[in-house]
Image (cartoon, rainbow, N blue to C red; front, side):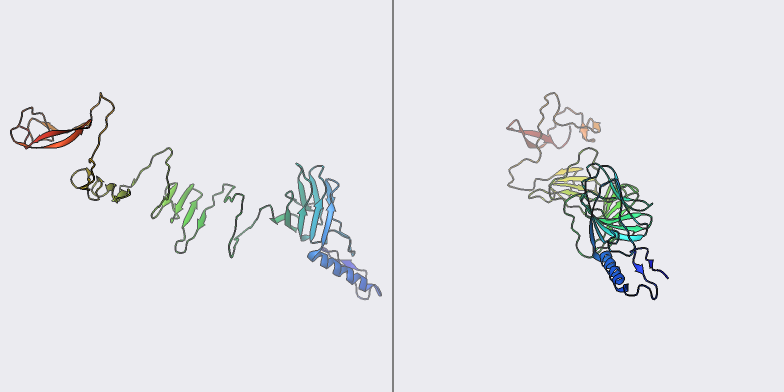
Amino acid sequence: MASSYSSSLNLELQATGENSGTWGNITNNNLQKVESAVKGYVSIALASTTDSLTATDGTTADEQSNAIIKLTGTLTGNTTMQCEAVETWYIVDNATSMSTHTLGFKPAGGTATNLVAGSKHILYSDGSTMFDVLNDAGNIKANGTLTVSGNTSLDGGTFVFNESSADLDFRIEGNGDANLFFTDAGNDRVGIKTASPSTELHVVGGIKATGGIDFDGGGFVFNESSASVDFRAETNTLTHAFFIDGSADKIGFGTSTPANASVEINQANSSGAIACLSLDQDDQDQEFLYFEGTSASDSSASLSSSTAEASSKAGAIRVNINGTDRWIRFYETAI
């Protein structure tokens, strides 16, 4: 019985009792081909737009048996390199000058994968399609779960998740929160500590900003759900420089307990040397203050139309008009 040859590495499979006196050389050739398949290297200069790896039965001269293949030369057009239509893998160094041309690598009669200029690729062929498993141009393809134990460094370039714009959510877990950061791809929303964001950015918990926050266009609404939620702005010395009491529907300046009016201003510093309220009206045709309410001829309403001078003067309030102190008299009754 004559020798046969393996389909992947073209190893010579000797029949019983065959090759007397030469079986040792044949065995050595087989072992060298196995060594080449593990860590062998070959450099191939491409001279045409269609080229094939040599595959020779029983010899060590075939190119296809090498694990590492370096492709060189200058492409004159879109070029294809092909191997035998068997299941195999290669490490391919694309050192060709490509210009604007493409360089495909495929099993004979099958589907090619295009190589990146100046890059090294790990390729796998299932006998009909060549797959680019990994290349140093930055492309990693994983069907299923990719698990990384340890640190991952992204140094330069751009990291894009879901560039194909598919309905794929993205989630980052914290130590105690499964949805520390969540993107809802189907609704184009982002959630912080929630997997069901109800608006473009939905935060469950507090927000702290060191620096400025710009609102360019659109509107800013605090407490749109009308909950009993307070709002407070601090200054250097005042913890309640501006305060909204959500449950009482009142606003305070300098106070955390506005109680005497819908808007209350409290200048609580006895030596502050500053007025509670300053009004600067540059339009001489317009009033300083505008009052609107129910009017009566006596003191029974918030506005009185009485022009009588009451005898029971109760006091006066000091005001400053254009730098000069003046007094506004007030009375116990309207008439």
